[in-house]
Length: 231
Image (cartoon, rainbow, N blue to C red; front, side, top):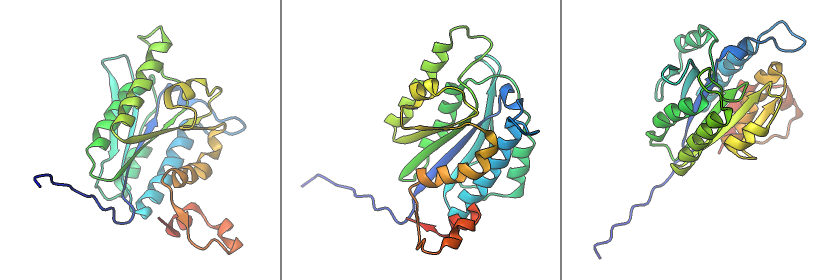
């Protein structure tokens, strides 16, 4: 026969993850009952998450974004795929300054372009955002919602799982419209991010915990927890 069949075998964990962080103007808001900003909580929790993903050995990229009209979508690659996580990357993350608007669809497309190119079997885009898409040159907010929704659908068509963590979000209507009913999670207070974000990633990446028989595991921090995980 002239037919040639190719079979792809997965060996162990085979995941590429892109972490996309919204650093728009609204992240300057103060977290309720604290003196910290949403931005500082986002940066702190993202740093913790990156260390955990690095320990897991996943291939990952980290980017931040904001926008100032259609022709000025600001997208920063903090760490690229296949780079080893170093202090320099975390310093870049901590050096980011919040500002401007949230043109989400454009940022999703940019992150997706890099993610689709990765050879890994499974691909995950994890978005952290504190508000619905907006920009100063758009009066019809439904336009940006539909744009983001279309960007998510295109990635899904190309085999990318897209999930959003809504931080300090008052409404889940726009999240459900963009990502679907099961592809987002709302964290009502940004102060909960450092605790919950690694756990969310853990769940999304479908890890299983080895021999959780000892109650002392409840007292481990998330970096220790990740070191006990496998497929």
